Amino acid sequence: KTPDLTQLSQTKSHLKVKFDPNFSKNPDRNPTMTYNALKAVSLTHVRYQRGDQLGHFLAWVSLVPVFISLGGFVSHFIFRRELKSMFFALGLVISQFINEFIKKSVQQARPETCALLEMCDSHGWPSSHSQYMFFFAVYFTLLTCKGIGGIWNVRTKWAALFLPWSLAVLTMYSRVYLGYHTVAQVLAGASLGILLGGLWFWVVNSMLFCYFPLIEESPFGRFFYVKDTSHISDVLKFEYDNARAARNTMAARKAMASKSS
Image 1 (cartoon, rainbow, N blue to C red):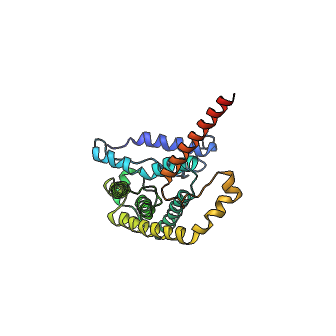
Image 2 (tube, rainbow, N blue to C red):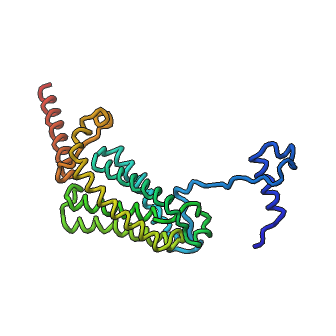
């Protein structure tokens, strides 16, 4: 549809008044004045074609990194305070900083289809969504295979590993399907995520692991109740057994107190 030129002219005049209060007093002072383009916070702003059910589903899949960061690691820190998870999250943050540095250095444009989404004000290579999810999948896999994820049954392990890898592949596909990235950009993000995830796991478990007890006993660790559970083979069973033992001990003390009274 051809835009109404009168309406566009009024809109531009309104923007000029908004950004320059003196324009209404002297409209001829700077007739060629320009205004800054508006930019939206696009944390959860993912667009898809109306009526496209697959696109709708993939738009939600594309938000998985947000759900993992806010719903997963933030809540995990609040309720668990485990060092291995905190370093997991720190690695993801470092990975995203590396992604932004590479994007600004390479400055590769997003595909032309992204212009239709009105969300192409950033560079596209490598895909940050793909890098995030494949970093997460690799690190989670290595944690689980090392046996410190509390998952010992082989069948249960395969079921647990299927979810992050399937979400990583779906996220990579969603970015191409929705028009935000090219195939080369998501493959680059996935490759970089796999590389950084494996490298960070090696750094944490080979170089930083020895500092876990110091962090746990530091003023920071004591204030935030940070704990190191990496030496426990099955954390879920350990906490379950200790919770039952504490309850039985408390019940026995109450029984003794009632008898003595």
